[in-house]
Length: 234
Image: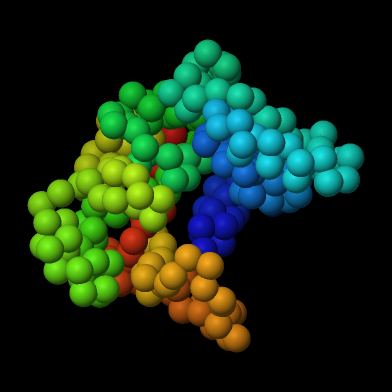
C-alpha cells in the first residue's frame, strides 16, 4: 500500500522520467530503497542495525550492475543526517517505521526536512495513536483497549514498548519545520489483526485494492493502524 501511495505522490510532484535523489532513513532490509533504485532513482539507504545492513547488502549484490550503481548504503542514525549529508541534497526523504522508536521525534523530523531540496517530498509512516484501542478491542483484550484511549504508548509485536503519533500533532510539526502536510493515507485498515506469518488470501489483489480504497477514504483511514503522511518542502 505504501509503495502505491508513494508512487502516486512522486508522479504528482515530479516530471515523468526524472531521476530523483532519494534518502531512505531507517531503510531496514532495503525493500523500499531497492524498489526505487530499480525504478531508476539514485537512492541512499541510511541504517544503523548491522543485521539489516547485511541483508540489504546481500539483496543489492544480487541486482544488475546498473541498479547496484544507483544505490548506496550508509551506516548511521536518522538523527545524524546533518553529519552525513548537506542540506537540500535530496528530492525525496523516506522515514518509514522509525518514529515509533524515537522518544522525541521533532529534532529528527526537522533534520529530515533540512535534507530536502525546495519542493521535495517527505514521506512518513507512523503508528496511529488515535486508533491504538482498535486492535486490542477487536481481539477482545478489553483492559489494553481501555488503557489505549488515553495513551500514545503501545507494545508492538516484537514485545517492545514504543510510541505512536497523532495526525493533528504531526500536521502541526510538519508546518513548523517548513514541510507542511500535502496528503495523508491510512495503512492496514482491515488487516492489522492478521497473525504474523499468516497465508495471504487467494484473492490478494482484491484485498490490496480494498485496503488502498479504505486508506484514502474517510472515515476508514482515520482508524488505520498506520498513517502515511506526505509533506512538501516549501
